Amino acid sequence: MENTNLPDFTKGFPIADLRDGEIVQGKVGEDDVILARRADEFFALGAFCTHYHGALVEGLLLGEELHCPLHHARFNLRTGEALCAPAFDAISRWHVERIGETIFVREKLPALAQYPGATQPKPPNSPSSIVIIGGGAAGLAAADTLRKMAYTGAITMISVDDSAPYDRPNVSKDYLQEPIPDEWMNLRVPDFYREQRIDLALNSRVSSIDTRKKQVQLEKGGTHSYGALLLATGADVIQLSIPGATSSNVFYLRTWSDARALFSKTKTAKQVVVAGASFIALEVAASLRSRGLGIHVVAPGNQPFERTLGPEVGRFFRALHESHGVNFHLGKTVARLEGDQAILSDGTKLAADLLVLGVGVRPSIVLAEQAGLKIDRGIIVDEYLETSVPGIFAAGDIARWLDARSGQRIRVEHWVVAERQGQVAARNMLGYREKYEAIPFFWTQQFGVSLRYVGHAENWDAVEIDGSLDAQDCAIRYKQNGRTVAVGTIGRDLQNLKAEVELDSHMQMSDGKLSSE
Image 1 (cartoon, one colour):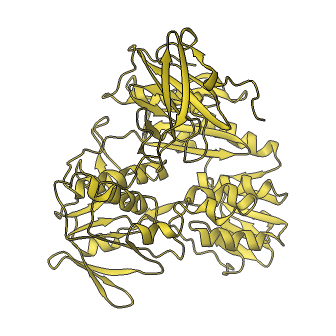
Image 2 (image 1 turned 60 degrees about the vertical axis):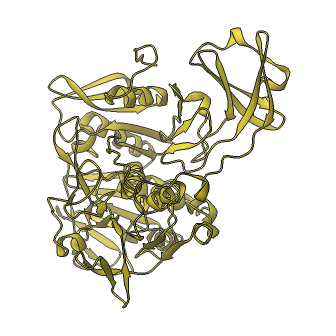
Image 3 (image 1 turned 30 degrees about the vertical axis):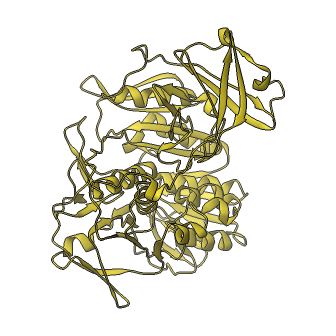
């Protein structure tokens, strides 16, 4: 519901009611606006994140950055500029005037010029052309950043997908509950690619890369030359060979097209078997169950997410699903399909109008291997996301980089990570030499319960839970040798933002403290 008690900033707001580092929400005419204070400066900005409408008043003010509590986008306090993914667009700004001990918010300021082109200083390096292989999170973030950084050369994005870049996390969440409009799924309006002169080639696959000639060969014929190349090919779903499985009764979920097909099939289905207990698998289970379908989850492990989040969190999510009528068959696998039944490894028979397989993905690195790039369970990149071949960069699910915090090479399959790597890779293709140091972040939402997770814990020797999982109000710290390596939170979005700062050795709170809230 709309808060009708918000202060009217045009009538003035007492300075004494807004301490340093605080944010308050109010109105300017019909607009929702936040007023933020840093020392003796005051800033008026749009109240909601441009990514998913997160309430910025509930976020974190750190230096001259405003952090969104939902998906950790960041905005410049002075300009409103979106500083890092998942938000791409700036928030609005208003003129602020101080009269005595009162702050007045006046007219809206002109919108920030996000693609200044020739008005912005030229980048240190300007490749003759840039080719991006991949039309997902990393690819779009890179193309968008290149234009924002005043790169004027040719940009070609080659994608195997049949859709322009879209919000992939939604294919297993909101979209399966009720198909949402294309404009909600598309990350950019169709005219964006024409206006920014980005040649978007859909339904296209690169068959090979000639690193000597600096060319990519298309499977359907034709080549593209590049001055710099970004590999953002993402990951491919792991497919299982199950006796009795056909294209009409077995579904995978990776693309928007997959989601459309699955939703269409489930219009007439009553019972669905989900093989796997990954995040995608259980998001699918929750989405379909919310529409009243009978759901059976079959997985070989003891608890969902046990390897990723630990057994206690796994038991919580299992109980959450069971409270909504989802049935679990753990320690088992789907052995075969017989008509409208799934036969499990222990002989159990389950009614199954269709089977959804969510058993994980593999990085799509065949092109890189064939081109002779250095590979180790992903494409090896340096701190600037450049591969072993100069001028070729990699970002997203395929990139394996040296994590400065753990001293280990890691590869992370998270949407926000891919977008932020795409942004950093783009700047480095232009010669800015920016190290990729962002803290990994992801979220999952099931039956209205959101878990947000910062850091990266491939291994841990202790898990500390502050608060209550059952009450959906807690912080989960994953520790290795006494050091916190990751933090998950439920119902504590602000604390999750602060945990992200805590994990980043290069950032400090203004007062040097990180309180739990």
